[in-house]
Image (cartoon, rainbow, N blue to C red; front, side, top):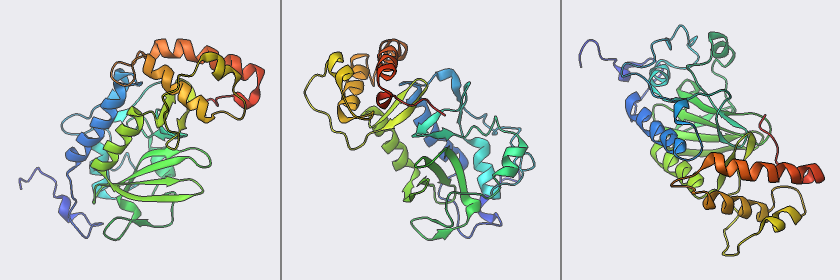
Length: 267
């Protein structure tokens, strides 16, 4: 190992060598974020780290809010910017570490959504758990990256965690959830989580969508929105602006007549 190369295995807060380098984990996250820019996110909002990492994200700037190796990883990860925080799940905002100030790091020093963390191997310290995306409100999902074991843990506010998953498997799972519209993003609206709603061969007309009763979203609502997205090219060539130009006015008109049919705005 050269004198200029960091020795991650000697970090004081680690008792085993990390499974992946920061660059390897960054490449996996970049794959996910790049995929999302082919669907609904603006490619201009994707921030890939320079080869040497984000120069401003020093341990001092980050207020040592996680362990040394976590901060090394943080310096190399890609991020999603934009005028508002990007959402990765229901009420779940991707953390753009290039855009937060030192006060944010101080506020979030070693905090977490759970009292203890576990990998597939053992209990692990909070110093290893790097927030990738944080939930806002009850039943919102947060995602934490275990930087040593290269695993992601989803924590749902008020409901606990879903157990660790290997980072590469989690990336593939998230891509599949979006591609199959089990997670449905919409401009300015809360993301719909509809993993239990199965598709049918029945075509749903706009008149059926407008006439639907019950709190939004019903299964019919979900199937209609999926149908609209696919008609506008999802996932291969999604014409996002055209889809929103059609769907949003219909959604707003329905909500004006029946507040139970309101697709909630993003917080």
